[in-house]
Length: 184
View 1 (cartoon, one colour):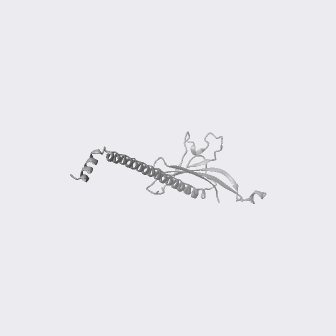
View 2 (cartoon, helix red, strand yellow):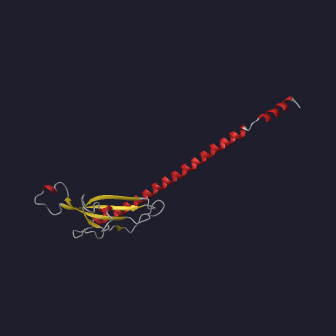
View 3 (tube, helix red, strand yellow):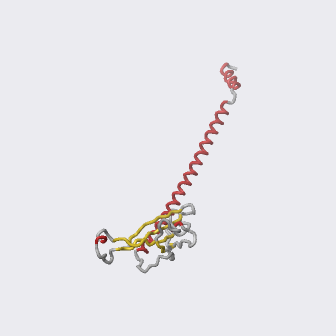
């Protein structure tokens, strides 16, 4: 045998498995990176789903708010605010049922459901959006009305607070919004 072949043969005898250890270490590192990538992707999907759910619930609450706004502008002075039909007298701090929209005791809140439910990004809300309207009395139409004595007809306008709530694609997404409206 030549000297070259002899050195090549003796080098193979002296190897102690370093290539196997290095390749196993690389395999472990690549496995950890793969698991990390899957975990990150799963978390991002959950966050994206929660964001969509929140958007759907807010859109549903907005739809209920708009439906109640339309109704507020058509209310007559004869409308009774006694808790029926979603119409409530104003609740103020210190009342037994304050705030009315959180009071689910006896008597329970008579939320009014809207019939046209908006469709969201990936479907419809799990539950129809709802509203209630509270009578907040009257307010001057403008600053000039406050100065007129005797007060002219039409200077005081009714004021209402509308509370609307909507759900998302599951029960984890819930939005509640409020607005105060002066009837024109």
